[in-house]
Length: 115
Image 1 (spheres, rainbow, N blue to C red):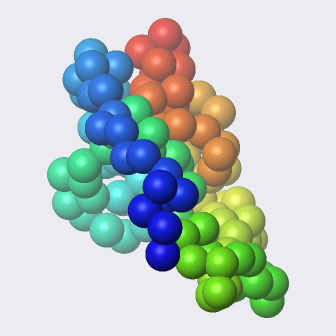
Image 2: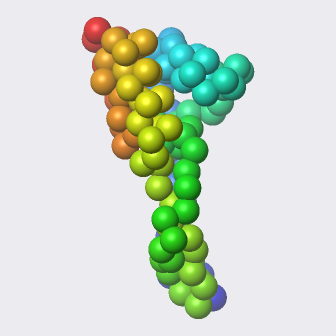
């Protein structure tokens, strides 16, 4: 494997999340209640965390080339399930702001802050 072809890993800047911590915690607490996973609010969240990172996924039946080893494939998964659609609707209603699977967690926190 050619190391020059590997993507560079850059540490996420957590400044945006730190400023919104109370709203991120509100989102995580509500999500944990809906998922039946108390304690999820202690999850580590960065400025790159997506709402879909906390939802169940299912295999689509499709394959994709492995990002680091093109001789291998990986299963393609989706978070677009009826269960997740219901959870997102309940989450949006409970928080009073729209929440979509592809939203960054910090975007939801900004909506909560501005609500």
